[in-house]
Length: 544
Image 1 (cartoon, helix red, strand yellow):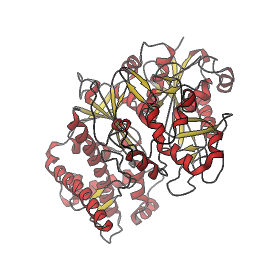
Image 2: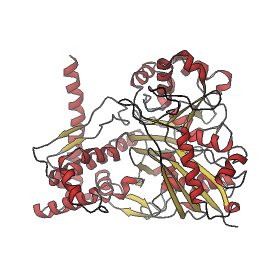
Image 3: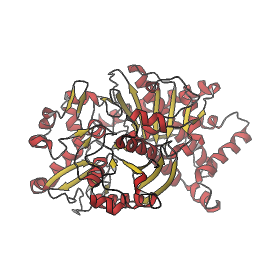
Image 4: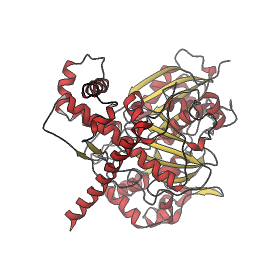
């Protein structure tokens, strides 16, 4: 009998699935777009029904020509979005429109800034595990916003509040257990070597104490580690819909970025053949970017979420940094520039704009007699926090900055600005690494996955700016692979999640840094930090 696993990834705008064998080879993939609503600025919503239907579609698609007996397990991951259901388990609105189908507050929804500020002003001890400040992208501020804005009648109708990954395993199995990954990282759930629990004092101080009452049934009274099997697997009803066997193993879920980290951190490369998993930094690069680091010590890093015990792998402490806008920022800069219109008009459909911009940069380098395209941005500098700073500053009020603009709308000017933005994202990673290293982390390599890694310029800038080799797995779909690793662990075919990573992680390409550019990037990084200093000074002047 073959041993096959299905990894399911619910992203910002689509659901994907992959059929994976026991060696970590992806045999088939499927994707289905999901609906998103933006009823007001900073309000981003989805539908849990729409997401679940998309999950069923892609799972059926990748397993359509497979013997159900061979499908050993399913592993779900998703964005850390908040799902609101009523006491009957039906969608309950989280939208200013009042539409019940708009019941998922997305991870990038920034409505709860006042609530996050209120929580941080409590200076509760729980906040120490989140770099000293909770983010408005985490769930307590969003739940508090709902209570403050939707009234008592609505509040009494709330039956379940799920992190999206946990909602998916509930739909598949009928079991409302929660993942330690989601709760520890996004819900201020406390996990320590001596045990784990909800901190009732924290929730009571927020006016949300009743969520902890009655065994915390609304937000989760049963907590499991990623890779553990959920209940008895697929229910008969779901198995029939998916055309799979009842009882097929379903793994306790993970947040999408953390699932991608499973996929990349298991990758073998020439960059660090003997290195410990704690010396590798995982970057999950998409719409936003997550920087994930593990350590066997409990280290506190200001402005970086963590230390979070066993949130990703048992008995290891996790730190999670990130950039709220990464891929979406690159797209925004391109789309908002006049030069992009002319560029798109002359490009064949199969040619991506970023590929052409990379080519323009190379032509400019050659024409100017420069040794590297990096040198083209000597007079153009960017601070990339167009959607606030997630880490290491934990300041959602920060804005993007550009220095060095001219009146030109040419393709060449766009290319240089595009390069400066990609460099700024790399300087942001260096800023995060600096904070982690100061606290006691030590890295020998960066392992990356996600859409941005398809851009060689993004990889080169990260290697050159950080001075670390960048490893890209041969299997590019690391998040889907991580989901399959979860499934393999839940099925019992491997003894642990770490064993699944070792067996299925594969190998990777290494992009080594060009150390001759260190002095140039040191100067650019100094300007990068000065831009932050100036923004704070300007704000202070205007507040006087």
